[in-house]
Image (tube, rainbow, N blue to C red; front, side, top):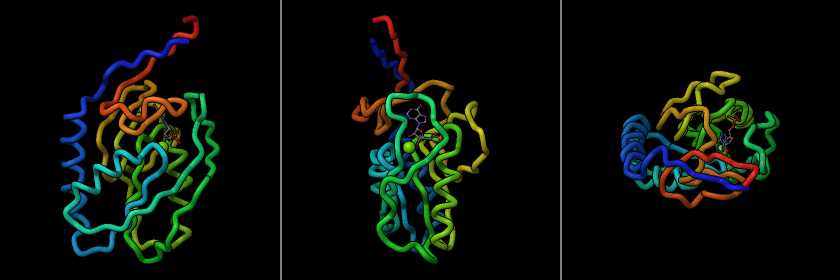
Length: 177
Ligand code: IMP
Ligand code: MG
């Protein structure tokens, strides 16, 4: 099996977009107590860059959900492997996701976090694959729309590979090779 990676979004483009998103978030959350929650593992690189570009203080936490394994299709069944580590009641929460595909993960996590009674909850996603949506979740802060390809890099994996790439690419798998 041979996997080829084709470049899609250059690291300079990503850096520029992350700065723009951080500017907007910094303006919107002035004088608020913002808790940024990253969805692991895919969002860890994006979140690390995003918070370092913010001009406001934030609290950080993470929530780990189960991954696809070797599949490139979401099963639609979301499993929380590790929950957030401190209370978010009455806090302003920003949930940070690497990529929105069907929208099922976000729907599940929003409901899960809403039960913890935050004051507000908004979504920041680096990538969105609109063609694949099964449900429409409003994305408050979006980096890029991407075509219906399996993307990797900048924290995003295929079967735990390619997270280290500084750019975003898409893969093509040749089963015969
Ligand atoms: P959803 O529940 O279908 O929206 O899937 C969301 C999750 O699936 C994301 O958080 C990613 O971890 C993963 N995912 C969706 N599309 C891709 C992709 O193209 N490459 C890598 N992971 C993906
Ligand atoms: Mg993810």
